[in-house]
Length: 120
Image (cartoon, rainbow, N blue to C red; front, side):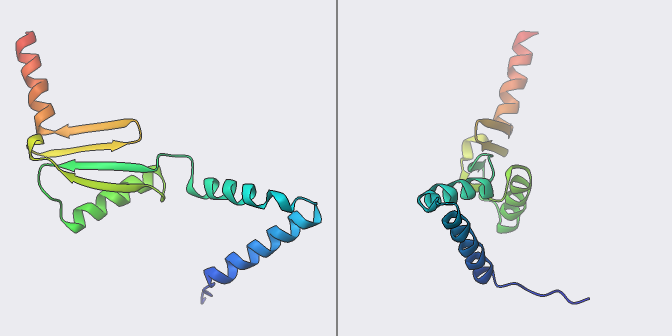
């Protein structure tokens, strides 16, 4: 069975025209900006908007794309991911998404090991 591709611009225009007509029919044309704003928030999702991934060395394009895919699968397609390089972490990754931090760096593991050794 063949699938028919829809032109996104045609679909968007039809949705817009339908929305404007519905607002007009309900004497609520002045609400268009707010409705569009709320729709955009809904389309983006309610999750975090930004993430940063820090590595000790630059990641390849393939590695970056794999990380972006995993993060967007978990947090939503609107997530923007920034990659940073910080040699002081020695290896591994530090991933920050919103207020969550996953620190799998070699530096943090060494600090944890040192604390365990000094604590025992």
